View (cartoon, rainbow, N blue to C red):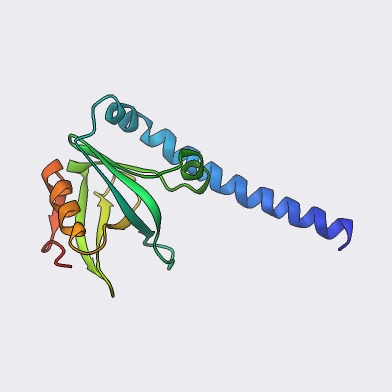
Length: 153
C-alpha cells in the first residue's frame, strides 16, 4: 500500500470519527441539564437492556443500562467511554416521551420516542421475554405516554 493511500484512509477514518463525535457532543450538550438533574436524584429503577436504533437496520446491541430517576430515564452504554464515542447514551424526560410496543421475532421491543419539538432520538429497548412488560410498566409509571397495548412477550 502506498503512502498516499494510507494517508487517505487515515484522513477518512479521522473524518468519520470526528463527524460521530461532533453529533454526540451536540446531543449530549443539549441533554446535559436533564442528565445533571437526573443524576442528582437516586435511581428508582435499574435494569440491563438490549437496544437498537430505528434508523439503522442493525442487530440488537448490548449490554445497556436503563436507569429511571423519578420522572426521567436514561438508556446508556455500560462503559461510559464507549457510550460517548459511539453516541449510544440517551436521556428522556418521561412526560416528553412515548412508548410503543414493536413485535419482534423472539421478543417484543419497546420503542421510545420524544414528543415533537423535544429533539430526542427514537430508540428501541428490550429486556427479553416477560421483562419487557416490566420495563414498559416502569416507563409508563414514570410518566411516558403509552401508545397502544403493552408488550406480551
